[in-house]
Length: 315
Image 1 (cartoon, one colour):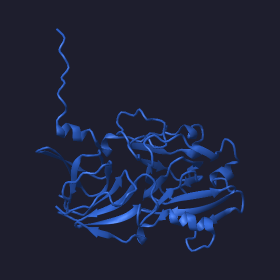
Image 2 (cartoon, rainbow, N blue to C red; image 1 turned 120 degrees about the horizontal axis):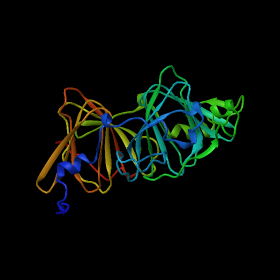
Image 3 (cartoon, rainbow, N blue to C red; image 1 turned 45 degrees about the vertical axis):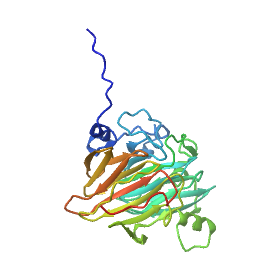
């Protein structure tokens, strides 16, 4: 006798677990980017959390469904590079480990900037850019794009069409590469400088018992369709439950984070460790708290450019 499938909706705890991405449940995909296939010098690996980012693998069942932004990690070995390309949306690189060289191209002239841990660049819409690992250790970075379903990248200088040395330098011919200088009067340097965020230059904004370092949005790089802050949460600090009209996500960098959801009179919580993420959907009452023994640090991404959509209150 056939048994009818249950029509009962999932309980809140099960629902919440479905919006959590655990680092230990994931693996790096070395075949995420078709444009790199057959070119060992372009090798890099992607770990998808929210959406597929620049990869066409949108059917990955372990990936959370995106809204206004995606989130993934990219591992790039020493000596490898990503060919110069552009997107129809903004895209940020936040370096977590290693030193990354990022190049912005204007024809056959390129400005290159070196980014260290917790430095970021927000690549503008349609701006040709690439990145390279000239360091002595691998680079790990988080990447987000300002669309849940971005189009495939447009390549401007790929090794299949250009000399190897030119492609490695993002299209710059000999003598056409310049070093990034935020104090240079060249309008290209000044434009690039608007979109580079140095961790050492961030000034914390204290509110509701925690420190917020603005990266994308007011006080950081000009936003597109989302904002991003680094949150430093002291021990025992937390915020009251809040709702917003857009999705937000917490990606833990250090420490442990307790996240709560509420629906009617029911509350549930999940603890997140380093490189775990939770995607909080629009309209969901939720909060965060540090129950750990050390300060926690996490990325907070919000699917709006409006800085006035929310004011936190200490718990």
